[in-house]
Image (spheres, rainbow, N blue to C red):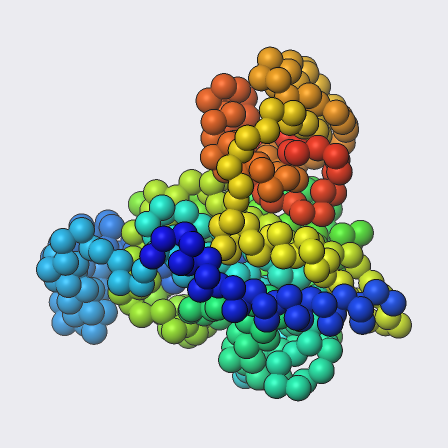
Length: 442
């Protein structure tokens, strides 16, 4: 299917989204855990395939000669050998809905009677081996499908499980969801403990106690090795100036650290325990074969090449309720860019940049500024703060991962930054992109 045919296929889906936006625009006027969910399931399957190299002996040594798990993976390896090139069976791109749910320590059915703390829509392209991820703030004010009324989007899971959540997202944003993965917070805690902890840089002191919600967060700023329980608290914390958006950012930073952790051979020794956790705490309609395909693709994924974005909008409070009011036009831009991959070809020469840097890194920032000038790029705003993340933030739809990669070849100091698309243009509204220069972090 060529690009024109593919675009025509999506037109009907777009119309649904546009009708929803027009309706909501008038009424509303008055973002690993992130990818942890798909990583957990794919890593469990993928590392077995990758590190056993199809060896029946190695598989039997790990799981036992006649165990069901051994028989399953031996069968899967045989299918792989029978299929030259291990060609994908699902076409080029697929949308996968990732949900993280929490029962707050209650006996509620985690697959239906719980709200979703994490909502991520991933667009995975096996052909180009690339991933885009959109974090949907859980407080987003939307119309819940099946006539459930206007509520926060995270209530859809409590009202109708993954089916209602999927339907609500499809109707609201005009996208088709092909597969889903749901994971409970218990999985996060258990997996991080099995992995021996997770190194992560905590950007500021985090302190909060909620006895009713069984949430206790006490983390100090700096490089930390988080336990499973601490990781859950880190992901759920939202009691600062950024609220739900701050939590979405921490989920994305969690992804970066988790990817680095699970891409090590030592994980293979943990596979039996991870399989047990997955069976208990994860629900998905992805087949084992599909999981293996994604795992094989992800073994060489550079976390900095995963393009992430949070749906743009503004906070709004009604009584005791806090909402995230989505911006219709900017939300459409994010959907176009990350789901439909509708990105214009770069033909501009008047690019403008912003610099956000830690005062300790002023000399490095000035060097980058000078090198940008040599490339004909004007730095129109500079901001000193205690930034702790190394980011390349695209504000304009012209700025793509390809542009960033080309720029790093000319300016090596820009390498290894996480690529983020920010339609809100939070830091420097008139710039096309922003570079952050932090102090050295884990």
